[in-house]
Image 1 (cartoon, protein in one colour):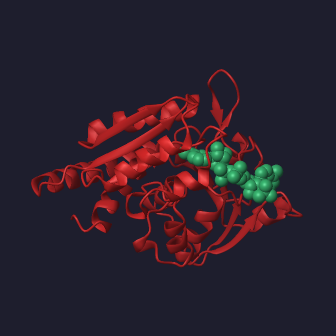
Image 2: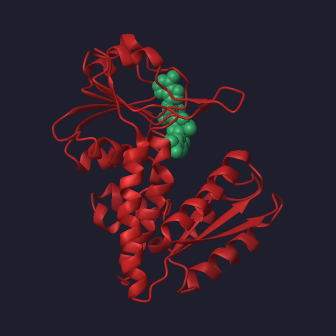
Length: 285
Ligand code: NAP
């Protein structure tokens, strides 16, 4: 039987309704949610993501202040801008689009963001909370949170499940491993040194692919009925994107998140949700 396709859009729409209601309540209390976004350079993906934040923010009643800087901007200027936002009580969230130009230190830039305004969960303090199981105190990175939210809102429960995670990257795999442990999953984390990836995947009742390799997870690697969550985004030319999961996996999986239209369609909404959490962590709501 063909897999149930878990689409991101209806779930994103529902979360956006909830955000809109919360934003209205905040405004009645005199809090006007504001997210500051910094885009250094003109990486096409980053430009697209930054603009989409402005657009979605408008729909939700959230002001997204997008600041663009030339690719050759020096680190001091970048840090000064972030410092200004850290100190500005009208700015509730700060996000710096990645990747940054090579001459800038990603670590220094990420560490300069006040943890309670760090809506993409990149600061070591937020990573630490996540690793320590204190998710309620953490601002969680958007893509791993999207994987969890998409599955949970589709009725999937991680408790006690064998979850095989393909990828231990900084952006998706590692934070996702912490989120899964918190949800009582029994996890196996795979990477390029994993000896038999197919066997590890076949053992999983849930498989999450976050490797950034088109078609890495094939039909032969998936046991019938498995829930497959595809976080991969791989450009294949002509502006087209595919995930890490081969299309024929749909023939054996129980449920599958599509690419595009799955995990990726939730991330900006999750950022806005994180902004509301940031406002609470700042004691403003
Ligand atoms: P990353 O840092 O590049 O890490 C990739 C991970 O996959 C590494 O742990 C790597 O293993 C593992 N891997 C690569 N090839 C493999 C193979 N053949 N077999 C087993 N493991 C393999 O990636 P990331 O930044 O965490 O991102 C992961 C994916 O998520 C990418 O496709 C990215 O585009 C996507 N992503 C999606 C969104 C979204 O909005 N949907 C946002 C951000 C990222 P090693 O550790 O051994 O190298």
